[in-house]
Length: 393
Image 1 (spheres, rainbow, N blue to C red):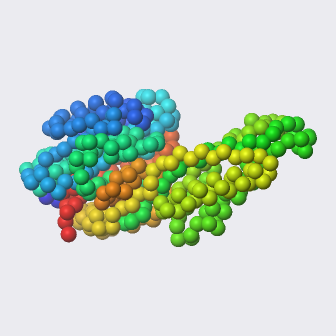
Image 2: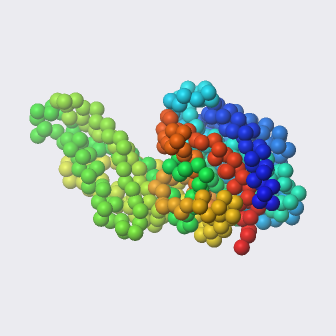
Image 3: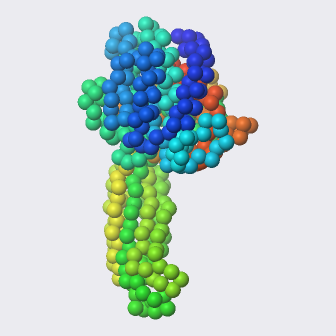
């Protein structure tokens, strides 16, 4: 089976490089992926897969039936793009101005379609059903995964192994990374409005300066991470936007602050947000002003089931060789695949797509992001191999 999968991955790789390039040229934002969904349906139909249902509006849940129709496994990719203006010099640059596949979801989709092509050709040898999830809206809250798990078609599946892969340009092409246990962070969005009393900058005694209050809040809030969190619990509190509509001689009435809090522990997550709210409220009031904190609760942390991940890692070694498998550190980025991992045995691994010699080094979410497309053969073949061996001991 392994030899067959590798041969088919090699045979069809160029077809799905073309699929990836088409998707890259025609990106669509989260929950707007109507044309992308139609294209995926066409690709599935060309493969011979017609058993599918719509989920989360613009997503698809498709099935390749195995001989025994039991012990199913779910393979997931995401299909949405980002609001980024592409700056690559490519023949297949985005034709949708201001929208770009800068996180590799075009590669994820093409890779899963290649995997589907391989598995459908081998369907007579499949013991278990293969569920293919083409998920929309990963990049924006509430996250497409949070909607998929509410769908009846998804809930009928029951608890089953979930496998997902994500491209990483900081990992060389040819290598794949795994991590058991807590892997990616929860993500909450923070919006603070600090209110004071504006006035002339030359007469601060007649004002309640929200800029000064905001600056104290930003500095003091960091003690949540440095002094209130356990050193054993990774936490990140970052403020990326501060807006004060004053002038060199004008103290404004309000200051707006935006940031994010991330951690790998759900209990600490709840505690930290409560402590943050108390801290900013008390600090602002102590300086004569007020502070309103709005929290948009985002994705939970992503936990890779240890037993499943170790099985997949061992099978990846079998498919690619020990030298091409690496162990990953925790990653404080967030992923809505985490919703699946909270309810099912799940494993999310990283597919290397970087190539320094080819100049493919730009990071995720940048306007010059790109991949070494030879990774598609690896990604599609590996996922097919993992799917047929997910229940191996």
